[in-house]
Length: 580
Image (tube, rainbow, N blue to C red):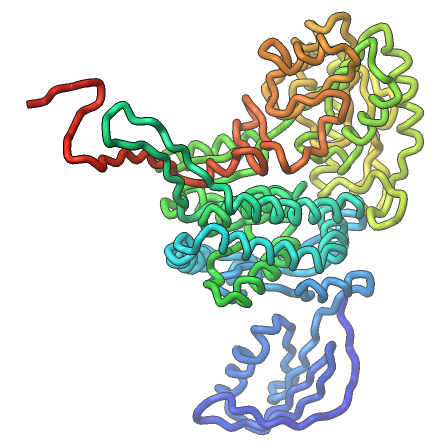
């Protein structure tokens, strides 16, 4: 949005150059600045452009080759003015490098998926920005790892407080930039705050083991030390929660963090980084402890190849994740992968059907089906199949689709136009493989990327069922026995989340046992999504095998050393070996 407004005249004197003392006739307001230079010195003009205009990222017009400049600022649409409360401007630098914001890469627009209108612009990171930032981060890691873990926990506590103070603003930004409904946007930021709280306690519990030695006057113990730098590459669907799972733990473990947010959610990357940077500055710590870049594949590839980064956490598709893993493995680095999910929810014949249907609605429709834990396959026992499907179709009729900021909305837009196109292509493939559309199946004609929540009746053997269609599409499959349901659950390449609805203790313990679900998340009588932070989050097979957030996930962010200490005067050898 551009405005032209005439304002009061002000005359300024600027010391712009050791050899030039130029006078500037200055018409100023937030939207328009006119500069008249009382000098015909062309070098002064270039200095004005460089010193005054570039940091503000505003447009410049030169009239009739005279030394008068008309500067027109981009301003927010009224509904987006709240973004200034979290440090977002109409145009922003996208690299946080050693405490400074800069960028010399491409200029991109962040777009609201509800109307496909630009929110703000970002100058992405270049390779040069990356290298400068990484060198500063590497230097800062030597300082940060020497700080006692509880002191590091105190910094993370302050980060949590900083996020808590801006919770509503950050949640609103998440909604307009990613497209998820406002309660989910606020909930995602709350998840990062919860991770900060968790990490504070963890900072006093990074314990190693003391191990009995078979040798006299010897003891063995484990030491856990920081890795140095952890690279975190996050996806658009949870643009800040996944950062929290990784960064909060990595920081208290003594690691610096380099973060590359998703290319389509750069504003949340900038807003989160600014709050973290302010905490570091307030505590007189190197800002490069937390370094972030907005950018595309080039920056992600640089992180994967960088030998200064011992651990790379990547969230995204299985295809890209495999490429990242191969690149990191070639340099003997470690990878933590959170990739695709194709999650099944099983409803047994003794299930509480009303509870199950409510769970399926959230699991399949929440975040417009764009969670990695979204329920994509609903397996229903044949004796309750018709009842479940009828109740589910009725529940889908009640789903309000629309503006994610509007109260009562349950289904917002897909994140991009490409996502909407993929939905359309996916529906065609489903129909070609015998799928019957029970409800939905179409895009909604509007400015935004809205589609109908869709239920499909299809055979478990259809190839499309084994693929992840990232949208609100639910496959309904019929089964006869528990063993058949488990076989269908485990038949896909992915292994993230799963759930069963039953009242039978026997079925429950079979389900969570070695002959049950092969997923990393195995639930009973709750949805496949909405995981708590206290448990380790992650999956098996094509989901990548990584574990983040709670439990003992912290061990992945540290280097374990086994130490044997001889406090005697003899040298007995293990296994009773006598050597001379």
